[in-house]
Length: 201
Image 1 (tube, helix red, strand yellow):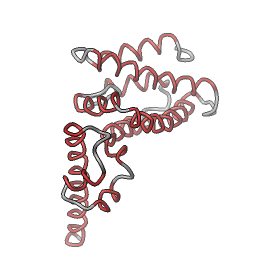
Image 2 (cartoon, one colour):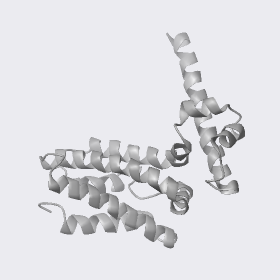
Image 3 (cartoon, rainbow, N blue to C red):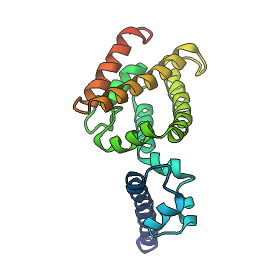
Image 4 (cartoon, rainbow, N blue to C red):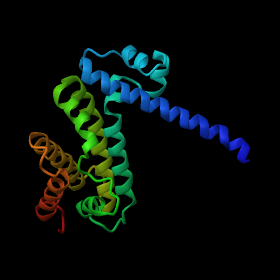
């Protein structure tokens, strides 16, 4: 069994290395040439793979540009779902931020490149907005579970939309003054929301 499992491990490791190389090459090219000027074929060539290989890992240029940020968001959603269901929505969000080794709802230093790309490229912003629409729907469903409500009810929808808007505000403040701690900004934002918005808070 061990001998049979080893090749799978190598294949998966190779896939991850290729995916990482494509992402790294994309960011380097975006910085050197500009996002709009960089083609998928340029990214594939820089990563020393074929264009067909690129499309086995990413559906489009927008996806490779945002993969790190979207992976982070997916991790946050997974961590949120794992919190005790008795916790109110914003309390669960704050718990994620404050737990040991937290992935955090606030942006990290590695996110700055991606967020700067978003700020300077309207086409990429449109793709991200579409992704965030789906994230908001998933947040509403999770919050509804905690509130004992339907996902289409006003309260979970309002909470989900407000959480996304609060994080957007944190990003804008942080980008305007990176000396500020995004973790502290996010904490302030969520505590303010919990004090004035969450049902029964």
